[in-house]
Image (cartoon, rainbow, N blue to C red; front, side):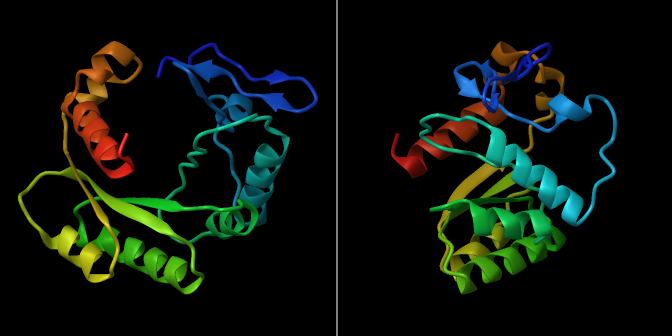
Length: 179
């Protein structure tokens, strides 16, 4: 997104920098190029602290990119973020979908709204993921095809916006959020 060189400001909390009209916050602002050897409670504590001290002001959406599966961090997000809704992203892999299936089952049990599922990096014409998602009674938002131009576009917003990935993502989100 071209966020290099940007840093949050500290002013009665943390004010996230804006990148292309998006407020953007990441723990990498503090870890830099170093690995963060956190697990369990350490991951949860870092996430909770980051959420607690970041001054977002008024937002239309708060997007939290989480790793796949059900972790302490996912459970903490469910517990701490009011009116949370999930947009789940999966790949076409049946193995990846098993993780998604378990997450969807948990969210359903907890009565956490799932606004939909997106199938990312689609390479073959197979309805399997869509059928499995819809079989769970979840809205299938659509497919984002694998785009080998994506990697070479990272860091260049204009080039990124010209990719098949960006165009298809915009179309999918606009159609499902009725933008």
